[in-house]
Image: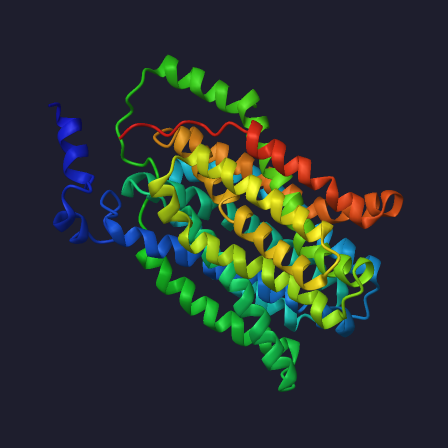
Length: 420
């Protein structure tokens, strides 16, 4: 055994050595142990809570600054463009310095920007702050997925579903907290400042617990010529990169359809009351959170490609059930089935993208690109569905997503996991 192999064997705990794994500390960059799982999951919760708190207060911001629907839409576009732009540089950055320094900074900066969103008095200042918030959110989104994939690789067992479940739960927490505070008459500025204080404290604490995932201090294992060829490959987009990215875009378009249009479909096409119609979103997100909560255990028992195919087909069946049923309650059950089936798809895709080249700096770049595709689906999906519904009707537009889900489930090829 070489000196480098001895160092690696000493630094990386295995499942066969649980005592040694549990005794590691998160401050040791090369020995994350089992503790790295929970800080990685908590990052998803904090980032999701920050974004969800901002989103649920958009109505209040619109009234405060007297914005029209179009102006609010443009501000949302600025947020998304800033996020997409910053995602492009996160992969190379985290590959060089690690995800921990990036996340430690972003988890502190985001709450400050969230507080400023509620405190600024003019529209121009609001746009500047929201642009900065979008940029930092995009950076955090990519870095946290890269971090989680790396921790998952080191632990040797799935954890991405649990991370995304934390994101789903954070959205529920933010919406409930906002409803309670609005009912109590708490102003938008006070709410955002209080939330920012809690998030800032959480970010400072969590930053100390994150494990290191960078390549600093590791001896190069390839020749200069090989590294130059690797850099050239990282500069281009392979066919697999694009295929996986389009898979992520399609999945997020379908998810955006369920979140943004299910209630409208039930109210307009099935005659459900507004109160009953909105429970479709709750049913979808609730089933999604539950599915992600057990998703890691399912991934341990079943191969990722088989679980991905099954989830996609279940989601397609649930959507078909929702669209074909004339009874609103049955349709809501269909959306719940769709949420349960779709719950594992994005986490499995993220895991596959990162695991394909987990030991290479290229993995961070691949995750950055995949995040760009998924974010684009989240941003443009609901709008595209709205435009299509103008011509074909909402029911037929949503029905067109059923073959999309089937095609994604049956045709997408997840990269094979490296053998441990």
